[in-house]
Image (cartoon, rainbow, N blue to C red; front, side, top):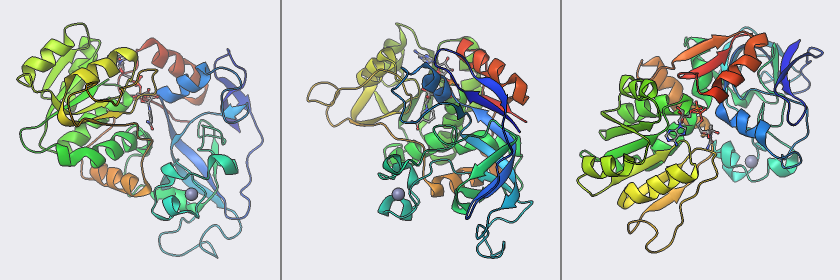
Length: 352
Ligand code: NAD
Ligand code: ZN
């Protein structure tokens, strides 16, 4: 099969030919329908050699939908059947935050917080395990699959991360987003344009979106932001004015650079919350006087399995939808280059 791999530090992703995978006991083989291209992959490929928790090469792609092509022995709930278990031909989304499956976090469907996975050599697809930028994806257990229930598989692939990650953060902080509140979204990219729609669907908050260019701010308004602000030196003053000097109740920072985290720290209201979702080098100090009083800060990771079901339900109800630009598998290196250059609006999706 064809696959797009990150093989050599300093070199971009490469299209290679690999043997077709064969599902072992408990495993499910998917024919990949679509795979999203996430900014995290650029961070992974920019990491210092040796700083990754897994070896190279790795097939990229951690946002996937597919069709069940084959079941390994015992993978289908015994004889390939059973309600809720995948059967050959089913169209599914992949829950990518693979955990050990046995611990307290995994039992609660919170495999994104499994403390044992890294130590057991369990990695998400595309982030250590072979990923979805390929003709086939091997999934280690059927519990990682969720039925698409009629959703368009191309626009659904990014829901498994670009929507799931902000959903997880918004769900955890929505008690702060009461009528009259303000939510700020920094970065209207793959995650950001979905974060705005999720805020609209889940909360009555007034939404302010920040980004660098007019085109991205327009996408923010299209996604449902009530106000947009250019992320420049005047952004703090603009946010102060919009909130009457009180600050925003929740800031979702989908960039987390030193600039954006400093802004988040400065514009979050007393008793407010900052969720750092971006994998940048910025941070918000937690100390008396570093922010307004009572501000909490989290750096959440991905989402729970329940969150994924919720996100797919929102999409099925037409309340969120992904803006995609589609690429073929051999165009995947180009898609990464375009993401790096900042010329992808919404999410780039590879359709093998
Ligand atoms: P993206 O490239 O699609 O979007 C990033 C957006 O931020 C772009 O619109 C860009 O113009 C904007 N931006 C850049 N610098 C900015 C600044 N200083 N001020 C305002 N806007 C700015 O990226 P994405 O795929 O949506 O990912 C967003 C971030 O989330 C990345 O850092 C990614 O690694 C991270 N991520 C984290 C998790 C998690 O579990 N925490 C999961 C997925 C992605
Ligand atoms: Zn676990």
